[in-house]
Image (cartoon, rainbow, N blue to C red; front, top):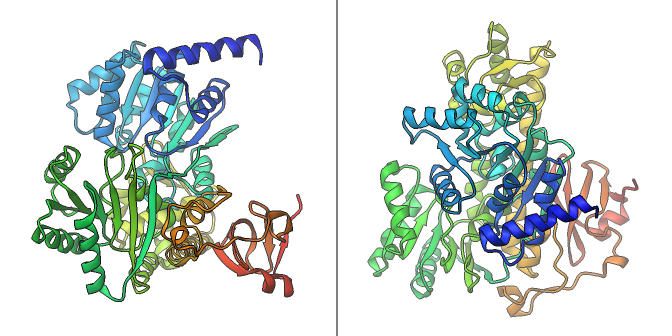
Amino acid sequence: MGKQSKSRQRSLHQLAQERFGYDRLHPGQEQAIQAVLDGHDVLVVMPTGSGKSAIYQLATLLMPGATVVVSPLLALQRDQAQAITAQELGQAAVVNSAICDADRQEAFETLQEGELEFLFLAPEQFNNPETLETLQAAKPALFVVDEAHCISAWGHDFRPDYLRLGAIVEALDHPRVLALTATAAPPVREEIVERLGMQNAAVIVEGFDRPNIWLAVERVGDEAEKQQILCDRVVQAEKPGIVYAATRKRTEEIAEQLQERGITARFYHAGIKATERQQIEAAFMQDEIEVLVATTAFGMGVDKPNVRFVFHADISDSIDSYYQEIGRSGRDGDPAKAILFYHSDDLNLRRFFASSGQLESEQVEEVAEVLQQQTEPIAPQALKEQVDLSQTKLRTALSRLAEIGAVDTLPTGEVTISPLTKNMGEAAEAAVQAQERRQQWERSRLEMMRGYAEVRDCRRKYLLNYFGEALEVPCDNCDNCKAGVTAEPPPEDNHPFPVNTRVKHKSWGEGVVMRHEADKVVVLFDQVGYKTLGVNLARLYGLLRRVKH
């Protein structure tokens, strides 16, 4: 390490101690900050509560220029700006739909004058051309994308407004990019890097393991039995806690049953007015509500340290979603419980959701042709008035057309046909094939979730393998470990397909080995997603072979 690097490291540690009260930085924090200061674009995958925000805050203090933070969470933007001001880390401002025009103008003027260190933006602010123009003039040094998994259509909380961020980075002459997320499996990480156009990217993944969370699955015979057992477990459990359900109606039914049993419970879903949702969330955060029964509309950005359980009344659509949701428990480090109440019929609803929104090539071709007729870029909302498609299908069609390079998304969010696109029919067909691949991926991820519910092995090991991490010994803090039903796989040096090695299947192409289950192997294939194969059959018929690079 050179003198300059050593000096910078001392400054970093001194700042961390003086401004944040850290005795020491987590290895992932320090590695990420150093990578940013060394000129890399950086993707950081670290659990909530592990200090991701300190990464961009410390980096900003050690480099000239302003930092722009894009986040979809208005309340979190406000809280982070207030914390920066309270810690005297620099001047911070927020620009989103919750502030008035005068405050917006003041924030932009302060940025242009070079007096603003941190600007927090909601992604939809780029609908206003003034936002991009102001940033282009200010030339920010660091562009932070919080909740970066929102840019991935394979992530569990896709936000269309995030698709423009790659174009915005380029329009700003590519300042250093720092992408932050609490959960992202390998394919989601790859998509984040690609969609943001990250250069010389450093990908830093800190341990996913939350050893204080008890993991369990309770198999039930039918819906009535499930509801009864779920409510029994909630009554018995230490509180506060969260119950997740797949539909709005289910949240209301469960909340009502819990109320009848004397529990202070409320339901929460996107059908409730925004002001009421805010009141419910505030009451839960202040321990005025014992149990919140919610759809996935609740949770992102919520950091309540004392949640003692997260129960799932319905199976999640993927391990990505499930792990993000159970990770909202036990953030104070004390014991917490994550229980999935499972019946195999539950998969039917998720399969229905995964297969909905099927695109026809004629629908995609219509979108492409209307785009080609435009003399200038068009906003998706204006485009919707010219095509006979729902908002969801139009968004999907545009996303798939963008994925194959047939459509360009501008920093303003407007879209335009790519000059390279000549044949509308071929582009539409390629986009439909891309959509079919996506749905195949979704089905494979649901199968991995089913595998978690039914696995006869350490559940923590299963989860960590999904995210590309190994667990050397059973966790002893899940129902399978306690029941003694975990199986020891053959030693890695004797296994024909070791974890993390590249393999190739005759029909499914190349992939990466994610985990072993007794005589089976789970592979994440590049094109078709997750597949589980019998090792002996794969060897016998030559279906799978290791790839040498």
